[in-house]
Length: 82
Image (cartoon, rainbow, N blue to C red):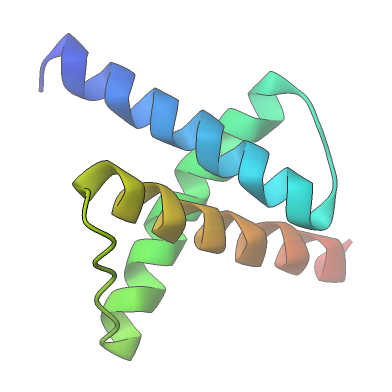
């Protein structure tokens, strides 16, 4: 794993976390990053489990959408638990 890959993951996490915060509320760069990265794993798992294939024409856009949906699920579950 090289530095470019890690930076892409961080950028996708921040964007996905920001999109999730727009939908369900919240804020802060660290919170965006954490919820986006965790959301990427959760979204990837849920989409694979459901057999859904996102094809929006760009690999990075696909990953951002899946991560944002996963982040929304994570934030909503965290709010239910707390």
